[in-house]
Length: 561
Image (cartoon, rainbow, N blue to C red):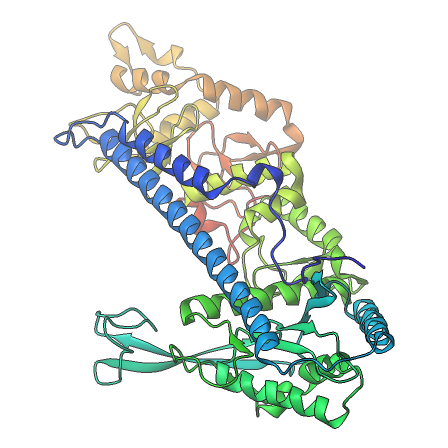
């Protein structure tokens, strides 16, 4: 028989790398704080963006370290409270053994029979309940064990908790400095949430040598979601079950009754009311309430319910709503919105959206949901290459949705636009006007669209200036305008011309200037190398903002062909 086996509800052990004593963690946290304090801070009078950013980083570091330290302190406090409860339960069992009547004087044959019956009963219980049964110790011929009993609840049980919202003098559901906050100084309200699984009842038993022939087992019942008074009623019921059939093994009958009938016995059908809180212990000494406070009990019950639902889901077969195939729960992915799909369908679904560039539609496949797919899950679904593409597309769409982000007309690097509609590229250091794409012209107006179009049309038709040039100037245009036009002829325009020739099969004329452009790849957002305007390959309309033109109600930004 295995000893010391814990119930399935308990937390898994930490990895070897995480098994760090709390004292070392606390010292590490203090060391981190000292490291942050030792950072050389900029002068308080320096209001530059870089200084403000440094202040924000230092502030976030302090906040994160404080949060980690607080979580470690809460974990230590929670563990100490559990140890105190376990010690209290053990002391109550020993107390029952001391205050009970002296065991009857039994013959050696009867003691041997009782010992064999106890061993057989525990073997049968371990075969039925498996890891939910733990043998704690077996000393001096007395066996001590505990069973985690999982309650059979209705399909959905509503949990209600009366909480206190004071005038700022006491926290939610907490005691005031003198006594429980009353309705005179605070407002009482009820918080509801629903669960499918309740934390287990913990039945701990000590078997005397006279069990089962003469005396019943000594026991305690520990429950997180009941007060000691209602747990006492369960203890009385277990006593009556022994009284109805003295001299027989009774532990299995106790467990079965607690599992199937305890809620109905207490009158709990569809709603369970937590509390009353902060009441002194009353009733049977064998009744142990593990309730601490709403701030601890409610999150603990929610986490247990989520973990148990996930465990049950993995153990059953389910139908995928995309391929309508039936698979084991381990082959499914559950999204935060609670919808689930098989791994293969989600993998193909995510890859298609990333390949076509429609990452704004990479949401829960349910048409009425629209819940997000976590980035961590996408990384496993897409692989490294597609995940990098997803990050790149997400950055592009985020920048396109920002009203003050423009692109360098030379290298298409994202830049910030100032109030005067000017920008400077951080890559090629080109300073330009965001309206016309020319060099920054402070104090002068932009070239008129009509004149700019005329110059571009002249270039498209391979119009030669030489016949119209004279020694004193040009017959058609002033020398300054011709010089400006020549300056705009940069390397990027030459690349566009070469691409239009290489990809002639995908070539098309710009709807604004008529110059041939090529669609390279799957991106339908075309930047004309000639007139330097943005337009859509599908509808041939000018694109002012990508976020407004492309989307669910507009054109697709990425298509094949």
